[in-house]
Every structure is written in C-alpha cells, then in structure tokens.
Length: 79
Image (tube, rainbow, N blue to C red):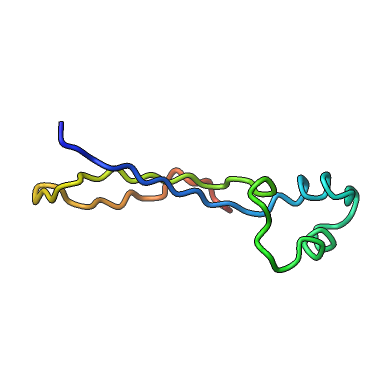
C-alpha cells in the first residue's frame, strides 16, 4: 500500500441560534444576532458545519494518478 495523506476541510456558517442562546438573545431577529456577533470571526462553538470535504493523496508522485473532479448531482436543488 502506497503511503498517503488525508486532508480534511470543513465549511461552516455562524450558528445564530446557538449564539443567541448563549448570549441571552433568544427571540431576537437574525439581523440583531448578527449585529451582536459583530465583524469578528465567531468562536468555533458558534458555528454549524455545512460541508465536509476530504482529499486522500499519495505522498509520492505517481503518473498513473489523474485528478478527478466529481459532479455535484448529489446536492439538492436550492442549496
């Protein structure tokens, strides 16, 4: 088996409900909660994961390996 490396990538969005619950903002509009978060990057506990990506790649060049970009047909319309 050829040695390989795995790279993970998580895409997140602010968890407005979680932030509101932790900061006594329940019942406030999304706009008000976003204003309370401010321009800073929220702490990780105030994020929801929306996408997980992974890449498994060999650690040594192999001319037989060709990059393949999968289609996105598994993504529901409207997302």
